[in-house]
Length: 95
Length: 485
Image 1 (cartoon, rainbow over the protein chains, first blue to last red):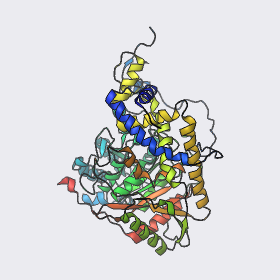
Image 2 (cartoon, each protein chain N blue to C red):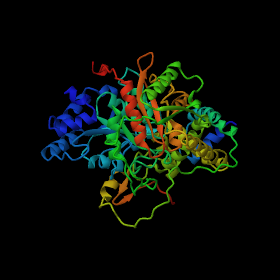
Image 3 (cartoon, helix red, strand yellow):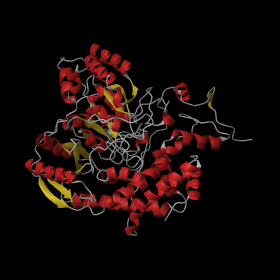
Image 4 (cartoon, each protein chain N blue to C red):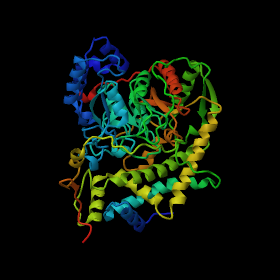
C-alpha cells in the first residue's frame, strides 16, 4: 500500500502539525519507506495470539486523594507562554 | 586534576571516603575539564555554580555512609530536575523549568550525588546518533565527526570524555546500550518496572526505562542499586526484592547457561561483528559458562513491531505539547492554528515523522491492521524469550550491527538509522534487562560492544556475567583528548 499526499495532509491535521507542500511530500516518501518495512508483520498469522498491552503485570493501585505538593502556583505559571494573573491565556475560542 | 576525572565511580567514592579528595575538589576537576571540552557539545544546561556550592556544603558536613558521598553526576536531559531547565533535546521545551524532580534523580541526590548538569540527547529520545537534538550534534570522544550513538549520546560522550564519573540514560529501543557500544563504555537497561519513570519526559511508556551508564561494570552495579526503587508515583513500577547489586557482584559464573540465538546472525552483518561475537563466546566459556544454541524465531519482526508501538505511544504522549501551559508557543489566528504552528515550529523532523506514523497507525480504520497486529507480534517476541529462558540463564549477542558512523552518514535515511537498534529493540519489547560492555575494536579502532540479556528482574546475573567477561576482555579506551587541542 502507499500513503498519498492527501493522506499525509489528513494525518497532519489529526496530529495538529502544520506542513507546507514540500515537507508533506518528503514525509510521504519517508512514511512509505517506513511502512514498506513495517508490512513484514503481515507474513505472520496472529489470529490466535493475545495482544501484549503491558509488560508489567500490575493492577492499578489506589491512593488517597491528597495534595502532596506545596504551593507552586507561581512556579507553574512561570512556564506558561502567556498568562494573565492566575490564568493561562489562549487565543479566543468562543466568538 | 586530570587524575580525578579519569577515576571510576568506585575509586572516586573510595578517595572521598578516605578524605584523599574532597567533593569540592572533584567538582572543580570536572568543571575545569568541561570548560575545555565545549567542542564535543555534551551539555545542554550546566549546573556548575550550584554544584560547586553544594559540594562545599557536603565537605563542611560530610556523610560518608551515603552511597554517592558528594559525587558530582551529569544526567541525560530527559530527567526532570526541580528548578533546573529540562529540554528533552527539543525546541518545544527550550525554556521549560520543572517544578518537580524525577524519582530516579531524587534517589541519586538522596544518596549524596550532586547535579553537574543536563546532557544532550536526541529530541524526546528519538534517534540513534544524537543528531535529532535541537541543541546540535555531539562529538564522539573516540574520533572527530563520529556520532556518539543515541539517544543518550551526550551521556555516553560525557562518560567516555571523563566529564562525569557515571551518568544515567534512558532506553526505549537501545538508547543506553547502543551509545555505550559506540563509545567503549558500559550501559545497562534494567527490567521494565525496576526504575521509576516518574519525572522522565515520556517517549513510549510501555518501553521506556532508565538505567546506569559507566566506565566499568562495577560502577553500573553501584548506580543501579541507587536508582532502582519501587515508586507509587509510577503505576508500572514493580515492587520486587531488589539486590544489593554491588556487594553481591561476583565473577563466579561457573555453570551458568548462556544462550546464543542463531537469528541474530543477520544478513549483511560485518565480519568484524561476527568475529567479536565468537570471541565473546570464547570469553564466556573461559569464565566457566556453558554455551547453548537457542532460537528466538520472531527476532526479524521486532523492529517493524517497534516502529508501530513506539510511534503510537509517542504520538499520544506528545499530544500534551500544545503551547498552552508551558513550552514554546507560535502565534496563530485561532486556537487550532496556534496548536498547529506551535507543534510545527517546536518539533524537529524525526519527532514529526514519528508523531505522524503514530497518529496514522492509531487512526480510524488502521488500528487493527497496525497497532493491534504489532501488540500481537510483541506477544510472540516475548514468548520466544520465555521459552529460551527455560533452557538458559542469559543470552549473549552483539550490541549493534556496526561501530559508530560518521555524523551525517545516515541522517537522510530513516530506515537505515532504525536498523541500528536491531539487536537492542527485542529486549525492550520483552521488558528484559540488558547490558552492553565494550569487547573489542573494528578496523578503524572504533569500539564494539557485546550485549548480555537476562531474565526479568535478574539484573544480578547480567551484571555478574558482564563483570567476569570484562576481566577477560580487558578493554581499554584509547582517547587522546583531540578536542582540547
